[in-house]
Image (tube, protein in one colour):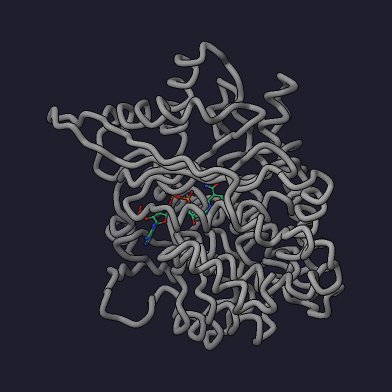
Length: 453
Ligand code: NDP
């Protein structure tokens, strides 16, 4: 076993060359849990850390399909089955041209600890493809997803591995994949979550990640006897997570003023109200249009296109109280982090996975603001996926209120266990350490119980 974090990371980097996002995710966890290893030598002896950084299984496969013009296209499919110590593998599928092995391994690794934090019995996994759904017809998306599932189906199952959505995978894609699985297996079982309500889905699943990230920020604010009422909030992204973060911010009396897509962002000084949110939802979920159209419709908004020559994203350079990065990994760089602090932002709740670069995370932690890392703050999505699995097993549906109450309770529990672990290991208020440690201990203890497997 390496003697320090740098030594351990040298091995991880040598073994997984060029997987930079995976290295980034691992080093953050390892730094947090090193003091735990000092207290629990049995973890070192059983090489728990070496084992949790090695996927239990990696599946890579060819996904051939035919586009609307009759041309054959070939994409690559993946499923990373990272850790099943506390339950079947669970985690989303991402369809985006940037998808590669390193990105999915980082996501699967984060998922292991996140799922552990939810209190539900779910292991960690992640998968997807470099397929780009943007600009594709519904039929092309259907042909691609059917081909993708024609291989994936042999690796998943309700007690083995239960994928869900992520970037580029929403209700439409889950529907096509579920249909293909059912045809191949001749079996109606809960092998995916995020399903439609008519065929086994859970109420509140689409809303859960965004709602959960806002609940998490409310829990953090509560430690200072504050609420979200009247707070100005910056949100990035305009997909599933961003939309429902904005909705819950409105429910709780806050004022969201931004949202974005990969083309640019809008700043609406008057605030994004319910009517404007309905416009965004229609634009993104039905018309599949661009966020620039928001500024054409509402004169109170200014649209700024992405400028790759800038060293920062101007979305994070507005006066505000709270920020919710809900687009993608590493979207908040060190300059953005400094800008957020300069503009008075003191609550950050990450809807996206690993949206802040390590230098930015350090700035937030050093500034002692209320910083909720994605692993904890966005766990509401997978938590309600876990509730969807339970409902499928029981063949019973909870009401909207029941699921929302359970989500509220789970987010509070994640918050409180992160606070408790941070306190126990001498870093009060550090939700990064807290979430990593609380998630890790349960996994490590379960792995010890189950022997060297
Ligand atoms: P969607 O595909 O619904 O939306 C993604 C949004 O982020 C879009 O607005 C998209 O813009 C933008 N975006 C994606 N990639 C980039 C990029 N490289 N640069 C700039 N903008 C980008 O995905 P979700 O809302 O589901 O996911 C958002 C984040 O939340 C991801 O990090 C995901 O891993 C995380 N997450 C999602 C969960 C879920 O339940 N869905 C659960 C937990 C975490 P455009 O349309 O132009 O590409």
